[in-house]
Length: 593
Image (tube, rainbow, N blue to C red; front, side, top):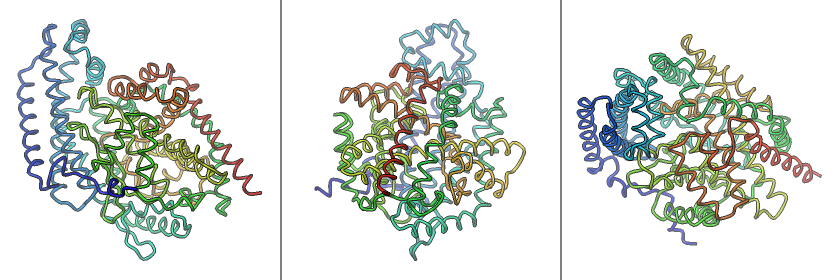
C-alpha cells in the first residue's frame, strides 16, 4: 500500500501560504473589509423596491452579499483550522476576532437589506420574484423577507462580537487549554475522550474519572460561560419579540414545528429496544447496568488497531463502490491533503469539517485513534465535505444549507461504511461488532441527543429567571439523561453540559435535534439507495444541490415523496434501528451459549 498517498497531516498552505503569518491572508482580510465598506455605502443610498426594474439592483446587491460571505467564510474556516491544529496560535486568535467582527458587520448589512425587502408592497414583491434576475433566489429571498422581523438591531449586532460570539470563542480556547493525566501521560481533552473506546476497561474508567475531576474543578467557570451565552441569546430574542427559543433553530433548519414534534414523539415511544441493547451489552461487560464510560467499548478487540492509511483506503474504495462522483471526491480529498488526522497532543478536542466555498474545497479535522470508530468519525466529516463538494456549482446565496441536512450527508457517508462492513462480516462475532457500532449511533441519536434537547430546553427556561448555578446545571443534566436514556445508564455523566461543544455554539443553538433528523432521514435515503443501486448517486447529488434552496418538508417530498410532518415517515427509519437492536440481542444470546 502506498503509505505516502494518505498523509495524516493536512495541507493549509494551498489555501493561504504561511499559516497565521500569511501575507495572502492579511491581504484577503483587508480586501474583504473594503468590499463590506463599499456595500455599506451602496445600501445607504438604496431605497425600498418600487417597481419591477428594481430587480436589477436587488440582484446586484445579492451578488455582492454572496461575494462578501464567501470571502468571510474562506478566512473564517482557515482561522478555525489554524486554531484546531494549534490552539495557542496567538496570531490566529487575533484573526478569529477580526473574522468574527467582519461576520457581524456582514450580518448587520444583510439584516438592513432584509428589512428593506420586508416592507416591499406585496403584489410588487410577487412580481419581483418572477423576474429572470431573481427567480433562482426566490426561496431564500422569501425566507429573508419573512424572517426580517426577527433580525437583531444594529446595536445588538455590534454587541454580539464581544458579548456573544466571544463567549463561544472563549469556551473553545479554555477547553483546548485543559490537560488531564491518564496512565502517567498528559493528554488533551480530545485524546482523553478518544480513550472511551479503548480495549482496556481500566483505561476507559481512569480517563473518565480524570476528566470528571477536571470538569468539577472548572464547573464554575463553564457555568458562567454557558449562562452568559444563554442570557445574551434570550435578551437578543426578546428584543425582536421571540418568546419560544425553539422557533429560531427551527427556522434555521427550515423545519416546521409539526415535523419536530412528529419525530420526537416517535423517539419517545421507542426507547425500550435501545435500553435492551444497553442492558445486554452491560451484562457482557460484567455490569448489571451500562456504565457511561463503558458505552464506547468495542465488542471485538481484534478490530482495535487500524492504521490511518488503511482507513483512508477503505473509505476511498467504498465511496467508489457507491458512485463515480463520490469515489473521485475521496481520491481528491486524500490525495490533496484535505484531512488532518494525526494523533498528537495540543490539538483541539472537536472533530469538524470546514468548508472553503471560494475554492470549492473542504478541510477535515480529527484525532484518528486507530479504531473502527475512528473510521466512522473520519467518514462522518468527509460526508460533510462531500456535501460541500456537491454544492460547488450552486450559486453562493443558495449554498447555505441547514444543519439538519448537513447531518443527513454525514450520516449517509457513515452508512456506506457500516453496510460494507456488515456485508464483509464472516462470523457472528464480527456481525455483533458492526451491529454494536450501528446501535451506538442509534443510542446517540435517540437517547443522548434527546437528553441534550431536554437539558437545553429546560436550562433556557430557568435562565429566563436568572443565573443557573453549576450545581443546578448538574441536576438538570442528570434528569435529562435519565429521561433520555429511559433510566438505562449508570454512572451518569452529569457534567455533559461542560464538554458538549454544541451547547456553546453561537451560530446554531439547539444543535441536537438536527443530528437526529439527519440520522433518520439518511436511513430512509440509504434504504432507497440500496433499492436503486449506483443510479442513486445522481438522485443523491440532486438532493444535496437542492438542500440550500428548499424547506426540509419540500425537499423530502420532492426526492422521496414523503410527508415528514407525519410520524409514519419517522417510524420507517426507526424500525430499521429496532431491527438492529433485536438482532444484536439475538446474536449476543446465541454466542453466550
